[in-house]
Image (cartoon, rainbow, N blue to C red; front, side, top):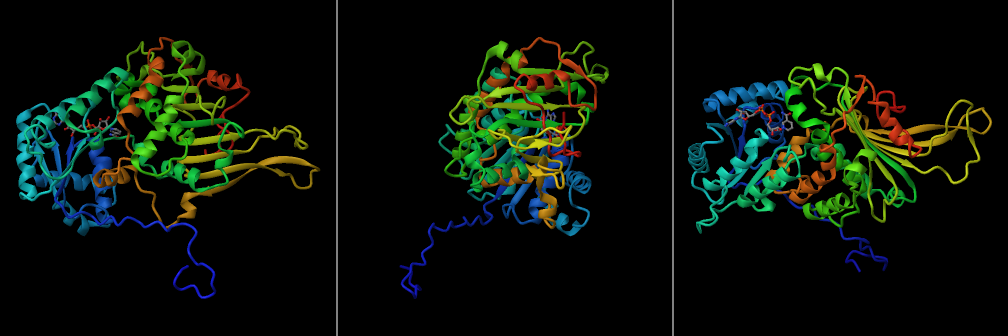
Length: 518
Ligand code: NAD
């Protein structure tokens, strides 16, 4: 009985209150080295996110940032360059005093990723900045072209920057490596890269990025599923008819054409982002939100995805290419690189047996939208009809990830003053109106903070990467020419036929029109 109980009734709470871990920013010297520190990603995303974190007091107290790239810049040149970037892409405009303080901890080391001598230079600069204090922590962010991932990690190992295993002088403090996407171009290259990374770092030190996971709305998927009891009982083959995941872009390949033509939509979007979303929708509830529980449950989903080899892939996939793609500068005029994909996947487990998961993504489409629609089954017996000329739609739940972040629940209602005719209407929640005073942070803010704090939950484990490549591999090998489609549409008609084979059609509840993207 609780001590202050006065009436003999227990006032003990029924569940243990959870104590928030106190994550005091560490005062140990910590350095973030950004390889490719002058590149597009560093300028547009990383430095603005770091500055934002600094303004929110969420960085280690003594964090120093070193940009490493080929240009011959001084610390001051680099600070100016990053100041311009944060002004253009971040929140510097009203915070010049804070920037002046922040910039004092930014440094630059000119160097070539292929030159071992330049890692030695970096090492002595690091040691100088750490002032000989131990433990000293180092986060290496590989914001460089993928061909450098393997060699840069190997050089980090041989230069002793990643610790000095084998010499009996393992330095104190943690060492971590953040590796950008794409991680490999197929299963073989991803496995080879995992092996070379594994020669230098333990898996627990490796943070592979899929920036989708840093998005608030993607994390909300987990909160939505696992903090609301009303949906979870329905979240299975008994009530769900099909699940649709769409990530469409209005823009064409633009100035990324040269890169894109070597990569295509499967590598660019499906292998990583769309399969991530699928795992989060389909996974079993983990018993804790720690990195291993979460990632173990996600990989279980990937392992359960039916793999039908090239024939299965051909039957369950529609690839497209927008008209005009071949005229883009940098694209091979005979290219059969797809810019659109629609997939039908099955997750062969107890929860999802027989429920189709439809994935759709592409460039030059009608609208920019990322959404997940869970379409529920029709009532077993329908006593009402739609108004003449209308169609009855079953319940659906749409999780809108962008641009209008929120949730829509569609249900049937009676049309007033028209007998017992019914219509479908949405109950909607929008982040921007529900949290008016709170900005939604950029994905990189969360990811950088997590990497600095050692939380790998939102990063990809080696086994996940490899399994995702196994799933899409037959699509990469496809020799079929993609279906042409008009820019500004929802892709080739064959993508509609893919769903029609199961009596389904593409839904869209999050877009500008909120009324079906078909
Ligand atoms: P980028 O070409 O703009 O920048 C590359 C950086 O690497 C530059 O700082 C350049 O100076 C440096 N560099 C190139 N060769 C070097 C060498 N030999 N030695 C030392 N430095 C060298 O590339 P980016 O767009 O910033 O992309 C970086 C990584 O992030 C890539 O893996 C990319 O796939 C990934 N990524 C980028 C974006 C984005 O929005 N830019 C989005 C997602 C993922």
